[in-house]
Length: 296
Image (cartoon, rainbow, N blue to C red; front, top):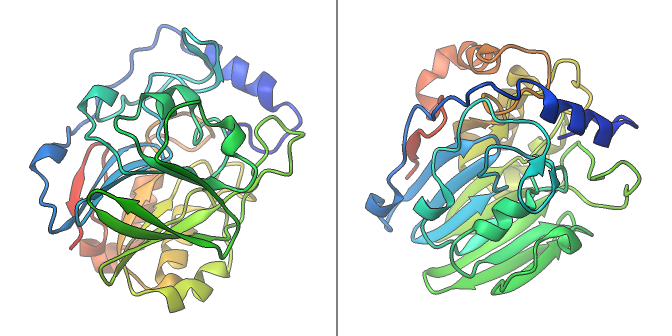
């Protein structure tokens, strides 16, 4: 997301890193235990921001890995940028070996090079068009840039997983001028089941067109950073409506409670999400950083 599509992206990022330098980072309320997850189920845990660890019938997927206390410009020894409000629910060393890393777009809070370099295993990587050059040099089992509508089948020792890139309403430039970079949401499909990962998106009617790719066991959708950036990020109510339009059975909210990227308060996005789903409360399966949900 950083920096909101304004000309002063990098300056905003540096200033964000200077705010509350001495503030303590809250511990994650929950600690997932992926070593105990059943490979015959779909299980996921929200690690913070847009980082979700998924066990999809044995295939281990990690979305937009952001694992360290800060995001921003990589200075090798540390990152220069905003500090977390809430710690990542798992340290890199506590992650299982990952089969697939999904990167939605090049913004610093989604494509974090130190975190991508710290992911365990030799994963495949799927990213948006014209963003692979930003990934750290490491031995990926495969590397794929996808345009909207393109699919790739990932082969891992735990089985195959099909990934399809979908259009969302956002933008992909990392430093303001590199507007050629793409931005994606993704559909994951394995053994007759599907998940939808919304990445970062503003309100759009596009999600209704993804109904044909379902049914989706869950939609992992952003709910924060909308005030005042509503043209680039959806509100909680809009996020729920888009998941509904896609026909998602369960709702997994992300992109809140992790970084102060906008004006809404810490608890507002999830409170508004709970209100939007008040009549279907059982669909909201994750509320706090570190929570684990058994999807199927």
